[in-house]
Structures are given as structure tokens and as C-alpha cells.
Amino acid sequence: MQRLLYAFLLPISQGLVSIGSGVSAWEVKNDKAYGWTGCGLGQDIRRLVQDGAPSANLIGLDSTEEFINLGFELFDDRSRLGCTFIVQDFFEDTPQLDNLVGRVKVINSSYFMHLFDWDTQLRVAKRMMRLAFQEKGALITGFNFGSHSPRDWDMVPPGLPPQYLHDQRSLASLWGLAARETRMSWSFRSVVEYDENCSILDPEGCRLGWVAELV
Ligand SMILES: C[S@@+](CC[C@H](N)C(=O)[O-])C[C@H]1O[C@@H](n2cnc3c(N)ncnc32)[C@H](O)[C@@H]1O
Picture 1 (cartoon, protein in one colour):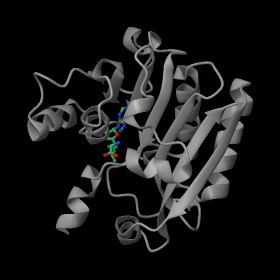
Picture 2: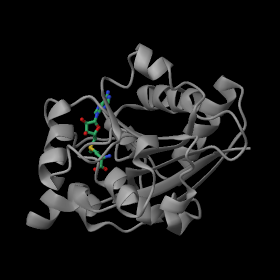
Picture 3: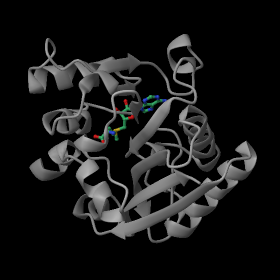
């Protein structure tokens, strides 16, 4: 149980390397923004800073200010971290978010998209595509709590909105649709990984790592 509770603290950007498009500290360039949607405590952002990435380029967004504050408490780095944290609903158009449109070289969206139903996930994908730096090679990466049998999840905890769990095919088709609707050309690939925590949440559960790349 302890392990499940703290599993979210595992640095996940490390895992992205396994699908060939990880962001490592040395790739973070001074003139580009790198963003996290639903960053939670921001452990991944800190991992990159720890590895030497320039923190001024890193931006975390989350609707729950308490998580961001907890991250500062946990890592005890409020006065020195130097990253930007935006507290807002990702679906809201705000001056802060508008200012990032077309500017974010790599967007990470880990354990975020699966929190929503299919249509809302489509909105998320299109909003992230809009934020992405409009040049070949821009990346949107993430991890989903996925399922070997894609469906509207029937075990959503009470009080939470409906969630759609993807397998590789359904997630690829959602990204394909988002690309068509935004008239952009993105390649998409994903990997299925065993994750004990996902299996505990659902017998068909798995972890889906994915990367969309502007081509
Ligand atoms: C499961 S947690 C994942 C946190 C982090 N990415 C990680 O992997 O540890 C999902 C996060 O998404 C945030 N979130 C949920 N809905 C959101 C929304 N509409 N806009 C911004 N953040 C949201 C939650 O507050 C939470 O921190």
C-alpha cells in the first residue's frame, strides 16, 4: 500500500528514454520552453534541474495549488528552484497560457489524459498541439494509466468524472483524430509496460508510454 501511495514520486521522464524520445537535461535549450501539464508535485521537473537543465525554461501547470506547494515543501526548494508554476485549469484560456501558444518545445503529460473521457482527452491533445513549438521535432510525451481492453472505465472512484482507458490502438486513433482536426502532421508511437500499480487499479490495467512528434 505504501508503495502505491508514493508511486507518483517515481521520476517518469527517465522512462521516456525507453521509447526513444526522452528529454534529458542536456537537451533543454536556453531559448525554448518545456512544459508539464498536470505536473502535480513537479518531481519530474526537479529531476531535470538536478541533472543540470536550466530551470528558467521549465514550466509546470496544475489546477491544484496544494500539490505545487507540497512539492516545494517536500523538496524544500522554494527559494532556489527557479521554474515557473502556473496554477490553472488546463482548459481555461488565460493570458499566461496564451503566451505559451506555439512556444513549448517538449510537453510532458504524465498520468493526466486518462483522467478524462474520450472527448475531453481529444480536447487535451488539441490544446497541447496548439502550445507546441511549431517546428519539426516538437514533442508531446506522456504516460497514461491504460488498459488491455480500452473502454470507459467502470471503476472510476466515486466523485470523479468519467475516464476512458486506452490501449495502444485507441490512443493512436485519438492522436490521429487530433492531428486531422488541427490540420497538423504528427507521428505517434507508444509502448505498453507492466506496472503493478496500474494492475492493482484494474485487472486489465497497464502503463502506456507515448510520444507524439511534429513531422
Ligand atoms: C494523477 S496526477 C499526476 C501528477 C504528475 N503528472 C505525476 O505524474 O506525478 C494528475 C494531476 O493533474 C492535475 N489536474 C487534473 N485536472 C486538471 C486540469 N483540468 N487542469 C490542470 N491540472 C489538472 C491534478 O491536480 C493532478 O496533479
